[in-house]
Image 1 (cartoon, rainbow, N blue to C red):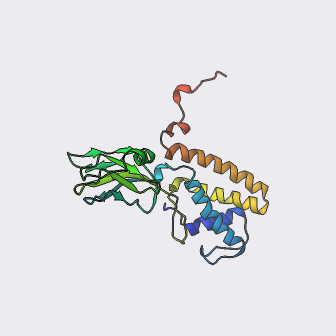
Image 2 (image 1 turned 90 degrees about the vertical axis):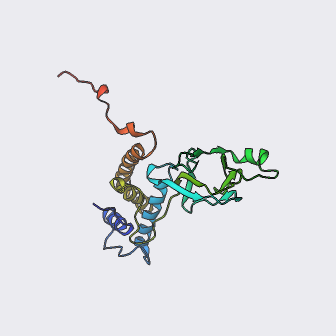
Image 3 (image 1 turned 120 degrees about the vertical axis):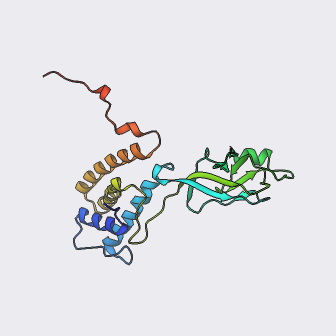
Length: 229
């Protein structure tokens, strides 16, 4: 079973909200309540992605950049959300690989930014306020700089776009969009059922796709109690 597209999620939301008619036929050029449906679905997806910066489904491994001798600054990837601060390496796939220490920006600015720099193999990296990187010291050669990161939330805009939220839990987008519909239209029965579904799916999504949460939804046989009749 393939992931639902943006358009399919919008159509499913319209049906489940009980909105009369058909469609939407596309996610662009809509008016009235169908335009709202498109916006509710898109906003629901981004909201869920943005609840945590370290969703496993937003994790990228491995970003790579070849350093330039004498150039200490490195641009961030265009879809960067948050760097994995423990993942910076030089030449990680070689026998001479080296892990780089992350220095706090304010500490670097106070203690290390000043003065003349000598090009040599870097041993640390600074994450600048704009999320670009600064190598300390400036590299004296070409090195393969690698790191992991989490992507920032991305909004669906085209009919065929899909959400990074895993297929098994993509119904959470519909549930959240139905909450927005119910609040806008004053439909308490839709709101109640959609809120229950959303809360359940969010708990399941967090337990599976956040670090160190895997046990939240697993039954523990050691805790089962057999009751006599």
